[in-house]
Image 1: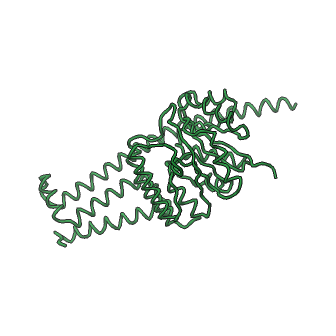
Image 2: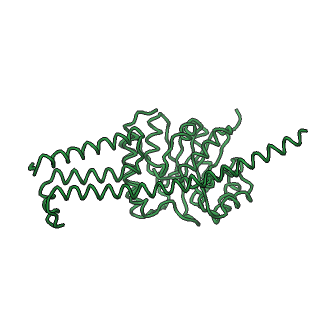
Image 3: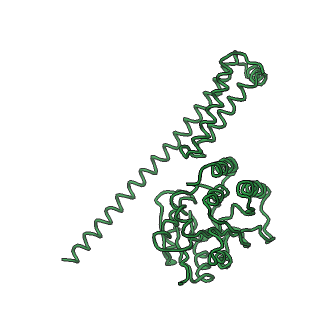
Amino acid sequence: MSAPRVLVIIPAHNEQDSLPKTIAEVRAKAPNVDLLIVDDGSRDATAKVARAADVLVVRHPVNLGVGGALQTGFRYAVEHGYDIGVQLDADGQHDPAYLGILLQPMFRNTCDVSIGSRYVESTGYRAPWNRRLGMLLFSGVVKLALGQRITDTTSGFRAYSLPVMQVCQHDFPKDFPDAPLLIALARRGFRLAEVPVVMRERQAGQSFYTLGKQLYYPYKNLLASIMAFIRRPV
Amino acid sequence: MEFLSRTQLITALGAVALALYVLDLVRRRKLGEEYSLLWVIATAVIAVLGFSTPLLRSITHALGVLGEASTVFAFGLAFAVAMLLYLSTKLSRLGLENHMLSRELALLRHELEEMRGSAGEENH
C-alpha cells in the first residue's frame, strides 16, 4: 500500500507576517505533506506571500471565518485525492515538528480525528484563567455527552480522515469548531484521539477571538453542544 | 403564585412557548445559534417578568411606569427594536458581500472567456 497523502490546511486571515515562517517550517519539518493556504478574505498581502512560497493557495473573496476556511480546505482535499487533512494555524502556534505524532494514530487507523492537545501530558502551557475555565467546562460537556475525556477541546491542531472531511465539507460550525464539532463527529461514529503536543505563543497577527466573541462563545458552544447531542446523527 | 391579570399569565406562558419554539428551530437547523441569542434573552426576560409579580411591580415602580402591563410592553418593544437593528446591520453586511461576490464573479467570468478564446485560437 502506498503512503497516505496528507494535506496540511492553513486558514489565514491577514497573516502576511507570520505565514512565510510557518510555511517554511512545515516544509523543513514535514517534507512529505502538501500545503494548502486558504486566504480567508485577507486585506493584506497574505495571498501574495503564500504564492511567493510556491504552495497551493485558495482565496475567499469575503471573510468566512475559520470554519469556512477549513471547509474549503476539506473540499479541496476530498476532490484531490487526499487521505488525511491537517488543520494548522498560520500564526506559528503549532509546531510542525509534532505532525508526526499527530498523524501516527491516523496512519495506524486507530482514530478518525487526531487532536493535538496541550493538556494530555503536562507540557508547561498555562492559559489565562478565563480560557482555563472554558476548557474545563467544555471538557466536562464532552465527557458528559460522549463518556470520553477530551482535555483540549479548543485545540486547532488536528488531523481528519477522509470520511470525516467528506462530512465536514458540507457540515461544519461557522465559528468555534470546538466541543460541539467533536460531539457531532463522535455521534456519527467517528473515533477521537488526543496526542500530547507543545504549543507556542502566537508570533504575529490577530487572534480570531475578540471580546464580544469571548462573551458569545460560552452561550453558542453550550447550546450547540446540547444540539449536537440531541440531534439525530445524519 | 399571584398574577395581576389573565393577560400577564398568557404573556408569560406565550414567552415560554416562544423560547421552546426558538430552541427547536435551532435543533432543526432552521435558525443559527447566533440569531437565537437575542430571542432566548428576550423570551427569558418576558417570562421572568410574567411569572414574578413582585419583581414586575418593583421594576415598574423604579422606572416610574404607570401600569405593570406597560413595563412588559416596554421590554418587548426594546427587544424588537434591538432585533431589527441587529438584522439591519446583518443585511447591510450581506448586501456588501453580495456586491463584492458579483464583482469577483464578473472578473472571473471575463478571465475564463479570455482563456477559452486564446485556447480556441491555438487550436485553429
